[in-house]
Image 1: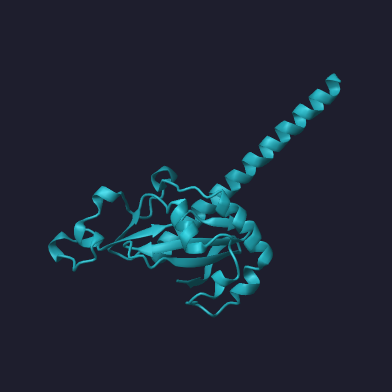
Image 2 (image 1 turned 90 degrees about the horizontal axis):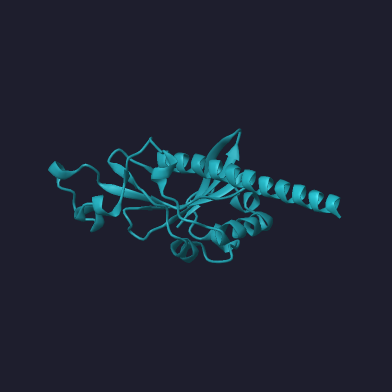
Length: 186
């Protein structure tokens, strides 16, 4: 009986360690994607909002559960067959990451390649999308991103410039250890 308890305890530890290592891998992938997306989408006079989208916003944009319809809504890029890269099996796994979605404070991730701002730092002219007074223009717009939804070498990242409500759905694949955007929809 004692041996069975010890074996059970060891199996539990292995299970916990395995779960933690998967989370770490996922977090590292998310960090890489956030860096790639911010570099890809940010212009000279643009900053990144310090928090990723909340779960409610992500669910409203993507719909739940994720389906093939997501891939055909107003495609911006038709160079790659997104249907084959994001098949039903991949979407099913991404649905699980969507269920577990959490907003991230980007300041905790040490993303130094871009300036981060909070809500209080956004000037009214940016928030209201009015013409920018040249003498005041520290930045002209704010980029909002979602926490990346990652499964294996596939990912989805939402993006919005200046909170205009036109949220892009961006599809990424990992090729040769680098994340590459293969398409987007609105």
